[in-house]
Image (cartoon, rainbow, N blue to C red; front, side, top):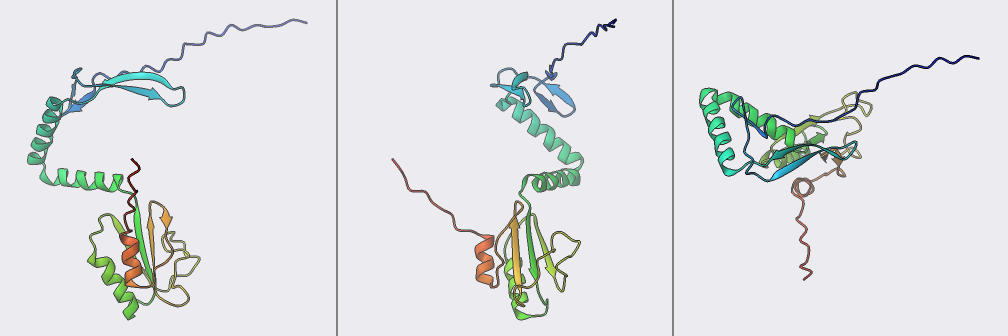
Length: 183
């Protein structure tokens, strides 16, 4: 019996990801080692793969000056950028009002929702949508026992449907829970 052996050269696996600099401002790398060091950890191994520095006030001022100059050159682009950033960072919020749009109860719920300042809210008026709808936002969200219902979902979690403006207001603005001081 003969055996064949193969010698494989396996390269050393490294995860060195040290960036050129800690900040990228106005198309250029900016390094300021006066800021506090921040370790960048590779989640799979827990290994520190890079170290960057927090922005100092001087770097923040430089970034703000660049943003202001960009805004002056392209005023609508900066506004759109902030809107996209706001949408990306905010938790998704959705409100489905299901029922006859002409009914006074539906109009009262719509008026309640429209009276509030709710940025990033997706508001859908759903009339006669089948329970097996292929539209995920309205699927299974119809009138509750034949009455108008408002379904409010925040961060992919939905509350029990509201039937009155007071119930909807409570969903849109939950009470703040204050913890007692435990000194």
